[in-house]
Image (cartoon, rainbow, N blue to C red; front, side, top):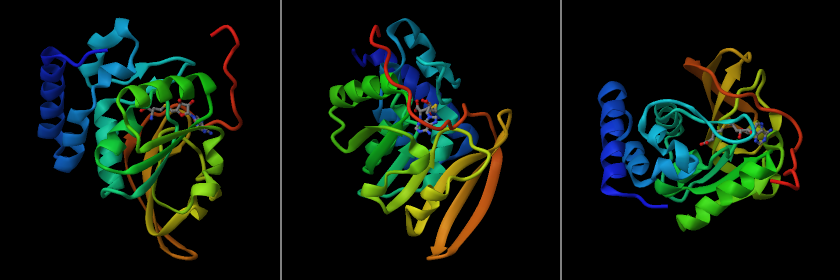
Length: 220
Ligand code: SAH
C-alpha cells in the first residue's frame, strides 16, 4: 500500500471541501489528513476513498462518510493521551483518526473478520496507540474503564447502560440513537456519579449496533 502525491492531493481537496462547509476543529481535519483513507478500502475501490460518501466494507458493514467521521471526532473533543473507547471498529479508519489526534484508543468489533483486517492495517501504519478487541461492544470494555470519551459508530434505539457506567465523571459519550432508518447524534456528558446531561444534533443513518459476536468463517 502506498500513499502517493495523487492520494494526498485528493485527500487535501476533500478535507478542504469538508472544512469550508462545516468548520470543524482544525485538529480533526489535520488528523484526517495524516491517515490515508484508501488503505481502509479494498484496492479496487481506492478511487472512492476521497469522496464524501460511506462505502461498503466486508460483512455488509460500511466505512462511515468522511464528513461524519469529522463530525463525530469534532463532537468528541479529545485531547492527546485521553483514553477513548470506540464501539464498531469496522474498517478501522475512525480509530486511526482518533489515534492521529494522540488519543489512546480502545476499539471493539463484533465481526472477527473485520477486527482481524483492521488490526493488520493498524500494524502497517504503526499505530501502537490503538488496541483492537473482538467482542460485543455494547458491554463496553470493563477491564480498561473508565474512559474519558466513548464513541459509538453504530445505531442503537437505547444507550447501553454499560457505556454510561464506564465513562469518567466529566467524560463524554457520542452515540447515534434512533430507529434503523434515522438517528440523532446524542452527546451525553457525565456530570456527576449519578448525573448525565444529553444534547442531540443532526440526522444520520448508521448500520445497527447488534448483540453478540460473529466468528470468522474458516474459509475466509
Ligand atoms: N467506525 C467504522 C465504521 C463502523 S460501521 C469505520 O471507521 O470504518 C459499524 C461497525 O459496528 C460495523 O463494523 C459493525 O459490525 C460494528 N458493530 C455493530 N454492533 C457491534 C457491537 N455490539 N459491538 C462491536 N461492534 C459492533
